[in-house]
Structure formats: C-alpha cells, structure tokens
Image 1: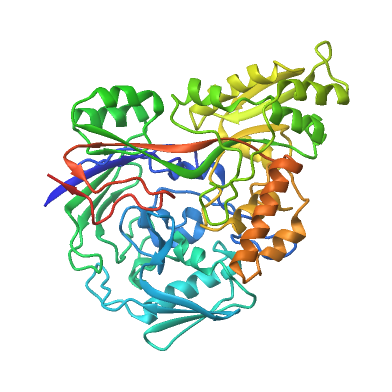
Image 2 (image 1 turned 180 degrees about the vertical axis):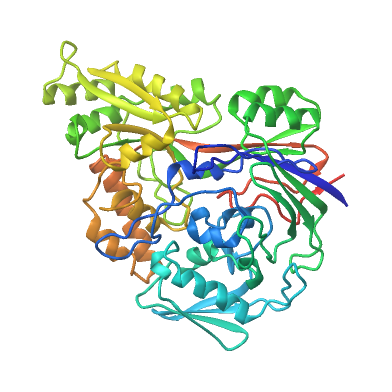
Length: 521
C-alpha cells in the first residue's frame, strides 16, 4: 500500500485569515473550508426554530471539543477520521453511516439501528452508550444545532431513539452534519491544544501541527474495510498556484480547488487529470431591501435585468462554471428548474430606472461591496460594474477584507453585496432560509423579512413533499418577486490528480475528501 498526500486551503478566522492545504502521497488543494468566510449558522429568531445557535468561529483544530464552538466537525469527517450516524453520499443522497437504518415512527421520534461491529481507532468497540454521550453533548451545547437542543436520547443497546419537543423532519440532515460526528469519549479529555480525535473513520491521526499538517495512518480494523492507502499527509498550502505546481511536478498526488487560470497548464502536463463537480455554493448579489436605493424593488429588478452572467463566466472563470439563477441546484430534491430569475434585458432595466427617476444625466449611484478572500470576486465586481453602467447606474466598487465586510453586511450597512455563498452547510433548505432570509438570521445580508412566519412553519412540516413544495415557493418569491438575491453562477470545484492515483473524486457537497477507496500505484 502507498501513502498519498493531499493539499487543501482553508480560511481560518480568529486573529486573521489564513489558508490550509493538504498534501499527502500527495493530496494538494483547497478543501472548501473557506466556507468560514461565508458564515454557517443561523441565529435563533422569534420563532425559536433556528438550526444553529451562533455564527461559527473556525479554528485549525482537530480537538473534538472545539467542534461545538463552531468548527463543525467537518474537517474530521472530510479527512476520513470520523463518521456520522448518517452521511451524504456521492449521489447527494442520505445513506447509512454508523447507523445502517433509520425511521420516524411518529412526528416526535426518530429511531436508528446502529451498525454492528464498529471499532474506534483505539480498538474499543463502539456501543450505544458512546453514541448517546456524543448526541447528549450536542443536545446540551450552546454552540450546537438549536433545533436539536433538548432532544432526549435513549437506547435499548442496539437502537438509538431520539425524541424531540417539536417535529424535526430534517433530522437526517442534522445527523449527517459534522457537529453530530461520533468520537470515543476520551477524545474530549486532555489538553484541547494537543488532543486528537479518536473516531471510526478509515484513517486515524498520528500527528497534527496546526497551520502546517496532519499525518493520517490507515485504520485497517474499521467497518469501512482496509483503506487503499497506507496513509495521507495533509499539508498547509496557502497559494492555489503552488498547489497546482505541486501536483504538476509530482510533489503532490491530488490538488483540490484548483483555480481556473491554472487549468490550462495542468491540462498540458503529463500524467495529470482535471476533475470538476458542481458544488452547492454559488456566487450572487445580495441587495439590501431596507437601505439605500436598493430598497426600491424596481431598482433591484433593474440590477437583475442588467446583469449578464455568461460574460462573467467566460472572462473571469475561464468558462468553468455555468449560469445559475437559483439559490439551490435544481437537481436537488427541493430544487425547481422552472425558476429562471429576472430575464437579462438592458432596455427593461433602463425603463425601470427611468420610472424611479434615473437616467444617463442622473444615474442611480450604488456601492457594490465584496471581499478579497475569494480571488475571483474582485474581478467579478469590476465586470459587474461595467455591465451595470450600460444602464443608468453609477457603480462604486468597494472591495476589502472579509471581516469588516461581514460586520457591515450583517448590520445592514451595505447596499449591494457580491458573495460566494454555500447554502447547504446542513443538507436541507431550512437552515438557509432561516440564516439568509429570516429576521435575525446570521447571514441575512439583504435584511429580508417577508417570509418569517412561513419559514418558521415549514420547519415543522413532516410531509416531505409538502415541505419541499413550500421551499420552492420561498425560493421563487425571493428570486423573482422580491429580488432579495440575484444568483449569478454555479461554483464548480476543480481538482487535479496524478494518474498514479485512482478512486478520488470531488464530493458534491465537499463532505468527503479522504476515503478508503483512494489508491495509488
């Protein structure tokens, strides 16, 4: 068996922003951990139905206790160290993890059958008591998932029964979230700065140097079966160009989240394959519906009509994306391909602005704000500036560091914002509607409030078809009626692998990077 290396990037919030990469026998690239710069949680609103209690504070840590402070446990799951009871597979479907079956016998109860013969990295067999300890910690955590708060956890030894105070129809999404990953209780003991997670994944951590690397070793005694690699080196590689160069020269085996401009060089290199997949993340404009000129829906509609998506994709993203008018991908169970957004029409945009009183001699002056932590956004802002100025807009572009941008945006102090947004930290739409489109939501950049009561009601609808139908209605109203979001384009993840590596593929939600099926010759 060979050892592989993987590199990825992560933005770390705290004293400042940084990047992490992963290199192993060699896996190098971006991991998508820079979701941190988008915010991932929703504040509890008046309805009390929000999914997550507070905005996440992302740290480069593998100590499980910190996962309840906001890092979400996603790193350990993504790196093949830990498992959840349920997982999202490569077909974007819920499938068994540490639980092989689950059901909801009534509106307030979820019952899960534990997979037999699961072993922790320390050799101890996983029991129902281990699972209960993790879930009770989550239910009691102030930084956990608020909808799960107070859930009663019981077991008959083989099954886990979850009893909630109110219907929680998206329980599988919660249990697939990194916050619900299962660890051996000893993982939470000792010095948080040096403790390592003891999970059930195909790889165990043997070394962790924050800001530098993880060293992972194959765990042959696990329920996944013997991994195809002896180990993985996971190194910090901040620059995308460096990651691309490493996989091109063979210093790394896999490069994750390659920048579009590096693709032609990699395609021309011997022994390198480019892999792409569309992630839930999208790039879009968020107009403030309660401040400045954008509080007028005619101005928002004019912005939407003046935007031309394909030129942005061709000029900035090397064609490696696709136009997207929706918040969610249309191939998801709740997606709606009939939502097409506002048609591109410069004449209509000019007409709308004229109705508000703006023309070429007196254009609508708007500030477009964005941030530098995603390198494509400042360039996109410049193209958008040029496009909007084809109609009577006078656009000022303001691009800076993410932290002050986020503070001002959430406070409602910005007029028009360009962001890269991942709407599926929790693989269910409810979290997005609560965080992005409800009063008090932690990422409600548009200061939107028109659907507060409906969003709260949807959280308790047990019939999945009905609940998804509601979400489609919400999305249509937000995109086509109220124009609280102007989605621009899909986010295509670009990875590169050496031809000596097989079995690696980008995950559709970026939930899995290292797994037992990767091999190297």
